[in-house]
Length: 239
Image (cartoon, rainbow, N blue to C red; front, side):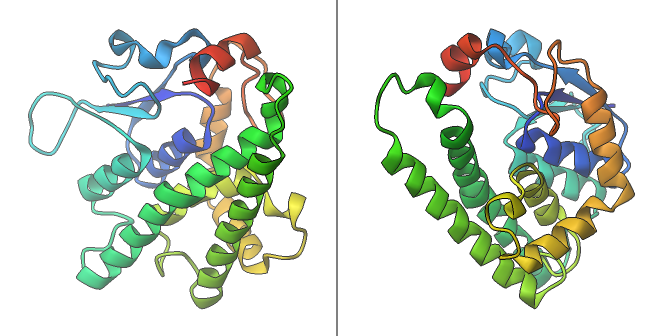
């Protein structure tokens, strides 16, 4: 059995998708970010990462004690290697998938997260400060990410060529921050790809199970929990 320590975020939903696609048995254990539970090692199988996702595998390939790991890209690579699925074994195919996986980890996710922060949360915490520069910076950087992604998807059906862990990494960010909202009709290849990934039964099942988890809070239409703002500001936004 695999335990995935869960909060409703794109980075965690990447792993939900991978576990479903790879047909691995798993359980979702909710962690309350607004109560600082993500920094409590006793709640995360000893992980001191201080962030989610964290995954604990009771049946690692070496037959040893449970393997506990963090960082969504590292977890996706681990699961791909564990199952031999969605991560090519040939040199060039593998490198293309890893290339786009790292692109997501170093660009699409962090930039998307900052853009989302200034769009959705900054007003709660800026205390009168002018955040126009920051908001514009991350909006423009997010658009640049989408432009690069759209160009790649004009060349290939999926980011790594075939469907892979690179697509699993990117999809939750695109699904949550739908480009059609800000840039309707501008990124046709991203829209085509998004529809194709969203139609996969494993992806649909991953979100069904994730959204069924009782976080203790109401959720919005995208499945995000309405954590108390004072807790989010103290333990998540301000770090």
